[in-house]
Length: 341
Image (cartoon, rainbow, N blue to C red; front, side, top):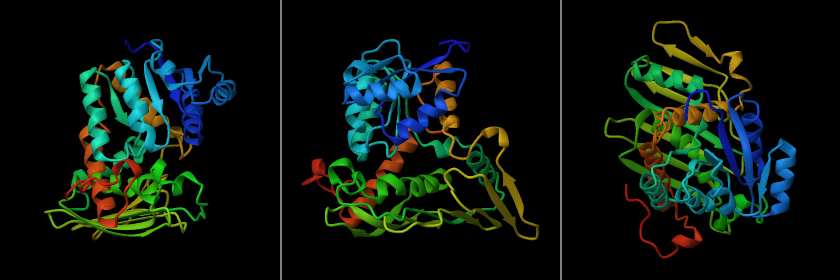
């Protein structure tokens, strides 16, 4: 693939996040959405008409076998990520797969192995890691702006209520607060500190057996701690804070897609970092799409911003949290401990 070529995208699934991502894709001059697939042909055709997409398929396999596609964006519920992404990788397609990447670390490892076997690009759709302000924050921390990290705090909660039939309450679809919302606080902590050495957690479970809200405390051998919270029962502030030995960085709202953050350093006035207006709306997924296309044009098998080992580490931590609180999904019932940490 040369730098002059448009990247041709296929969209697998037609839900809300697929629509949001596609809306941003069609606004990029070097991206072309050429096909969409759903288990329902009617849904695929309606989605194709909405976004001016040429081909609509009523099954995933047809999309996976479409050789005109450079990369497939998998936007199904996470319970189907292993099957959908695996189908595409086996057929020779590159894949961008939504988060949580899979139901568990075992499935994630299987996808990474498939990508290597078929020499295909694979990336988790952790758009937070591609956000320019988050990248700036990480660079400041890495450069020692706040000294050695002592604590990380982050939360993500929605008010609900979500009825029992909703996918977020359905164990068969990987329901619960952790995989849908908690993946952001966990990924934020991992971005700054890497994989923790120990995990403790408590949760309130629904009658269906998914977590309605979860609190986790992660610890590292350095002495750093991360206090993280996610909820389907209350709309939280969705803020994050990183405290170091020499200062603190606060993201006052929407930490996973911030429009600003504030650096506090001992003996200095607070310094505010604001998003460039050219970056577009704060909920833009374009940074993620640009990173995928950059990597494909460079012939890379994974993203340097969202590396696969980092994705696997996050999945191991999510497994450990679920193990601590007792959440199991149908295919895992009867298995031993998900990920010992």
